[in-house]
Length: 416
Image 1: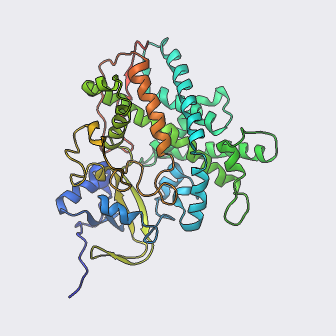
Image 2: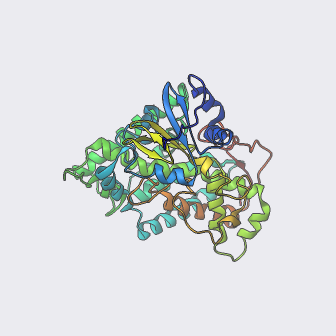
Image 3: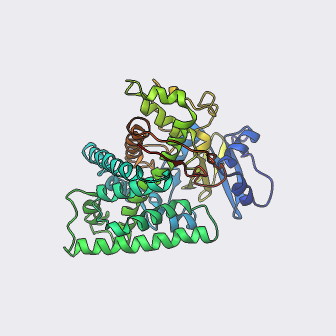
């Protein structure tokens, strides 16, 4: 008798339109209908394996079984990640490049980031007090752009702040779009890569001196496994891979503000002396609201998992949103409940808002710690440091558009 199982298969020639129609729920809907954490479908004419849940995440982040090179669609590379970025590397090359990123995530560097974030929030609040209304998403993008460049040691002329914050935002807003919106993201990446590349050349020529041990300083002089300096374009891509994700935290901050507004009973708890509750609240925002829908990898070599056969080079998608809403992992996952994180044992594979697995050696997002610290500062301002009103507006958000952002981008007024 054979020990292999047939992977449940979605009927039909191609389901790309279904993915566009269902967005974040595409994989989870089929996992539920098949009553299986794995199924096979066809997207853009190619066979694709989709899976989700804790055990699926464990095998997906096994670097002996899956690889990242050439896994991401070209449209994501041209907007979101950049060519030859850390997300697309494997094995020794990935390990060495990931070490470069983790080296700037030290406690001292994170403390600098926290202080800079507080300073920029205060500057922004002083500005907002004189505004009739504030579009929180847009303003926070600019706030975070200033913070990111200051922390990374990237000199940012005042006249370029608005342009750069919009360009960095366009990169992650356009990756799943089509038509003019997508090309806006591509053009934005090209412009920012050129600007950062020129800066790198000036640093190497001795015409610009970045702060010692800053991101710019360390990345410019970092060497590849062969002992040579990385080429200018690669360094530019990786510096942008610091700046862009920090600006993308604006999405989470919008969802923070939304959660504060929709759950006043939780907000009261944030005002108590319980120092742990803000982190519980932030983690639940991290889990509950849509951010990354899924991540992609290619099967590295033929293997069998739970009786299912995975063939080399098959594109495989791991359901990020669905794993964070999996009823096998979470009690009442569609209910907002920060207390679920109280006394919860850390697991690298069942809570994966920014990917799973190991930070240092795997493909989990290097900036997850950074994201949490920025959100702590932001939540403190939204709850304790300022008063404001939220007028009538469309506070709904799409489960189809990726990334999802509250439709009104959250308008606040009478900031004090």
